[in-house]
Image (cartoon, rainbow, N blue to C red; front, side):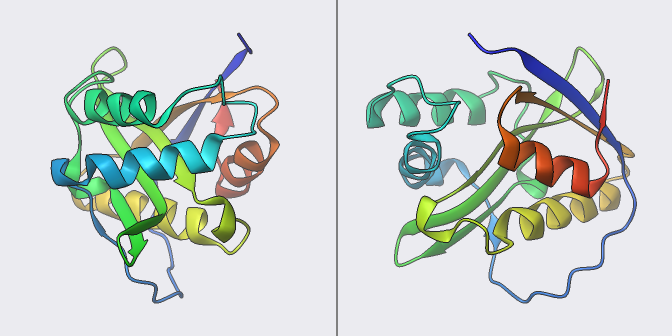
Length: 158
């Protein structure tokens, strides 16, 4: 198992210039999110040979509280023709008493187009609207695309 890096961000309002279509995630999105998760993580440092059933099960568990209560107003999905493009899932992490970025994922065909940054900014603004001031995450050491995004956004290692 790879080492994990804990990171935290003091939230501040984000300028969002892109006008992509994103909507809040609901529990009806479990299958589309499971498929997106498998595609996004397959072949990366975070992939351990999971099947589509494993990915769907992980999404279902997450939306049902595995990492704390699911924060629907702060979690977003971009999709096209019932195919997930990118998603961000935020939960309430009781241990730290702050929101947790549980998952950020982008379909491999859509990587490096700014969707992850866009959704993270949307989540930050939604968290601020809900009167939260910090966002916490855990990322796999060696997941350079994710680390680059989080550091670019101002997350600090804790």
